Length: 309
Image 1 (cartoon, rainbow, N blue to C red):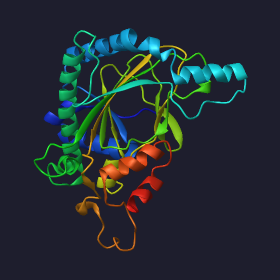
Image 2 (tube, rainbow, N blue to C red):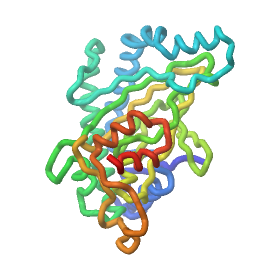
Image 3 (spheres, rainbow, N blue to C red):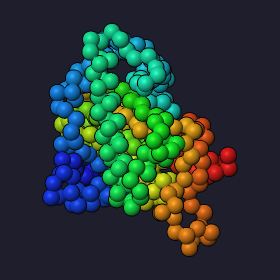
Image 4 (cartoon, rainbow, N blue to C red):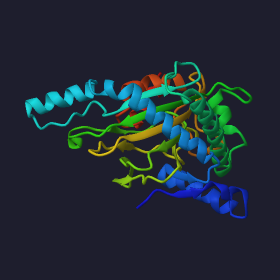
């Protein structure tokens, strides 16, 4: 079983309706799908791989060797307890957004990642527009909801640059613990050589197959709420591996912290609205406060907790 692979270029031709259906299926049945021919220049993607790999090797690899995960794994091996380290991730990670400090010592890093983020943000907005269309929502509905109103530009667009170095005892650690994503639309440029990403589908963990220069799309908790549960956020994890340094570049198009999120009125069954207690209405910043404490726990209690705020 493999997650859907969708040729994004076919939206512009005779197969538009078929491609829209494939995207709808990816959102409804999987919560994850891969885009090929997505319009991001291959040359740019190759530069992104190079500068991120150089950044890890030259600026971060040495410090990872003395990081908390490495120290705790060594302690575990010394104690010979055989237990698994459950409450941390075998991950080196930093975040890029418009208002923070970026690594500066890698030639071309800032320019390359700024261009990449610009392209990915445009792709995210195209994907959200297609979700609007498939859900029968007004054009621009999801984008406006995330930005706190039509014509505003307040949504948060962040890029998480992660590496999962080879681990000599992968059975004792998690690469990244299982979770759903808190935000909106996630666009992942994953390693096309080293696997490890899995999603939970029908009670089974399924590999997200590495595919050269594809962009993996997944839906976060806020898309689940806005779609009134038609699109679900999906549990996913990354396995530690003994071979290869997995590169993972995930960009998040998230609501503004001030944005109010609720099921779209067009998707709420008015007849059952008073009978069924569905998804709550909340301010995204309140949700993130809950998520920070409960990221690796089931999402339903998060919805209940934010309902009470």
